[in-house]
Image 1 (cartoon, rainbow, N blue to C red):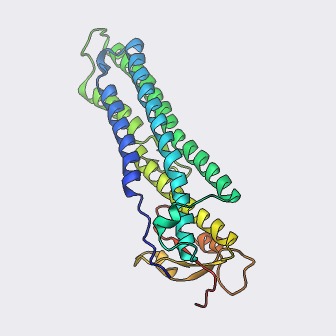
Image 2: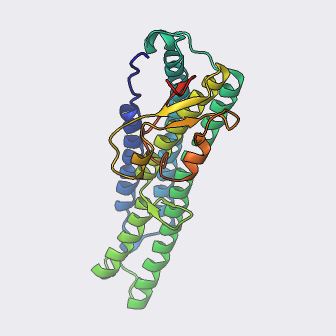
Image 3: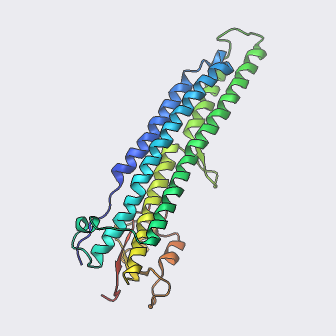
Length: 276
């Protein structure tokens, strides 16, 4: 069998994550410019308009990234399948002739839409949390001034001002709260989402192409894993439940949650005859 180099998406993923980091930094600086001691709704609206502009630009950039990179993960899966099954001598040769079959074309379209929806949810959550935080800070600022009986500037204590700043900062730094109640920085959540989706797209495209070419088995890659993934390294799985042999299916292996967890690096190589 030809030696098939591993895929590496680190550069592209880092580029997207940096875009979210930069956007979060720009929003943070915009909020830090607010004069919390004399904050008015008009001034806050100016800041929120800038926040919306930053997030809209980020949405455009992330949509462009997804449209380019999710299909690339599928193309890589197909190309490496062609090499593994002897339909091409090198990955470069295979990449030049890659075409999606119907099931892969539909899968890629769905993966692109799902990933874009996940990333849009990040910016929507940041926008919603920032707006809620600004509203709260305006109300708290007004109450603090009224409690002091003073309407002039610089009347709020340093402790209160620090608390208001923290409220605004937390709105940006914990832009996502998942179903388990865990708080994520936007860039960390984005890294996990796209890394996981690209790996899933790669595996799905590999499976679809392999089955179409009559290969119903695969060998799981080895990376010297130290976690539960180690139990699966080098093992044979079935890509179709109907294939003969006492091997676990891809779906049953994934259901154990020992392998192909979020951020998992393991892939698999299709084979026609597992005994070989």
